Image (cartoon, rainbow, N blue to C red; front, side, top):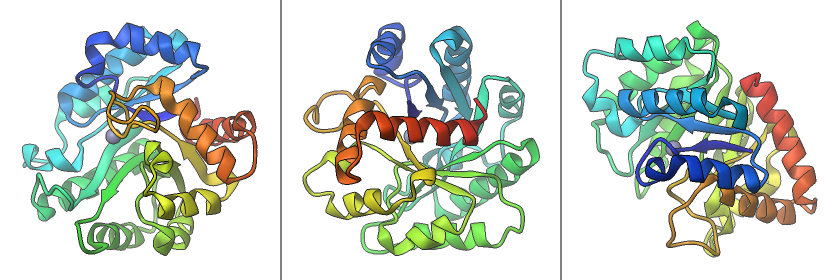
Length: 259
Ligand SMILES: [Zn+2]
């Protein structure tokens, strides 16, 4: 199971049928293809419809990088896409102060709009929160924003980067925490610590393919079939077996996405 990938984006989209069948052969029974703007969201939905029998589902939304491209709020095309039964999450939404491809204010307002939209359509919200170089600024702002709502949708912190510092605060929310390929990288001791501490019923695993390729394939294009390496790495840390971990994650994802 891969709860976050972008088979809808280059270069994976060029080989989507092969990428999806390699994932199936590797035992990936469900994958969530995540939109980052209107066009990638539309492609995610098209893939989810075409490969429904292979467990492909879609998330639709606006990535914080693209917040500045939607100055008038959520484009109406996304509301139409979200009504498709193959769409099981809104997002990826959130804040990225590392790259700052969109100004902070634009990111915050598009994040808020998607949060309220997810509540309205009763779908979980996939979150991308990445702080700037020196501080925990994006995580602070996200937690403050989430804390100001009395009614939150179920949340998925994709590629969680808040460290142990934010773990208890995140777990106090209706949130699942997803870990990807960086957990296999040599310098990721802090993330490995987090991967050990997440309660078994709140943990998810992902690739974020085509990015964040796990070891030993770093440098190559990532794809959902490699999620196996994430499971193996986390299972070792948690002193369990990869199949047992995969079963627990599958149950968590089924609860979250109702798929
Ligand atoms: Zn992503």
